[in-house]
Image (cartoon, rainbow, N blue to C red):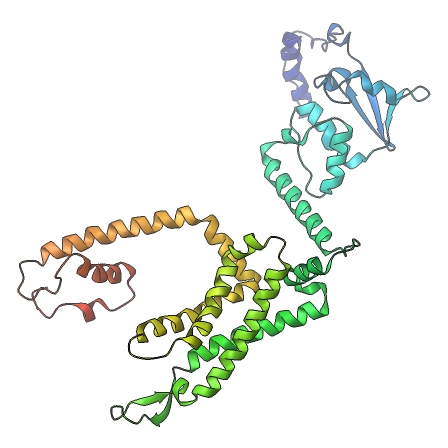
Length: 383
């Protein structure tokens, strides 16, 4: 058969472009090899009124599927002598192309659910989708699953919930009720007020402080100590009530207590209660200042009220190994260059690097390029 095709194919091409080479012999007859089609016949597939034709051997290449097995005979229509399928003809084009080429493609314009239903009906597993379409298919499946989970979470629950369960649901999803939404914004407002008060109390108020050096001004936190104390008390009361209510409504109190957000809540409110019983004197002044520093952790309470901060936290957590490697590489470079600088400047009389750790700061500034390097140069003109 191959020899016959090779014999007459050049003449067919020549006739197609309008000229015929001079030949002393007549054109050979076209191949008529009926032996190869003895066990094969043309099948007509009627898919919702759209007819497709293909060879039986083409379908039987995949005997584990509906069309490639004897199960297709259940859909044979005796009167029309064709197979009838009440399915989507647009998607069936891609399914029939899979039998012809052995490659399954995903049509991007089709619904992912409808495509999966057609594949399941004809017994084709989606894992054999070609590489050119597999990533697109997986992304569409993932987006569909996320949309379904979001729709299920937004549906109102018809089950009878206890008071504790309703309270925990209100804390975790404030948009479920008006009261929960109001409490959500109130706590967010007091978090912002607490953080701003912690900053403003260090600003000089312009009044000269008696008993201090001339020109030294009194901070607002000391000049209006009572006002800042009342404001801090109101904020801490709100934070305490929120923490106790969350602890009361938590499904598992032990898991809630050891969670990161619970620890942040405790660290944010404990300095206030400790300062009430601790007298501010010279013996404990260092510990008292340390407790006041811990109030800055209240800013992390914003993560409960900001989806962006939570996403940032999850991103940093997932990239912990990569960030650790970055810090390790940066530390190696700092140690290497600081060691070189220390021994290079060791013999100089105006050497400012008393040790290798003392040269760390210069190495860090040089690597980050955040300052003018000339401002940090030693006074020796030979450097």
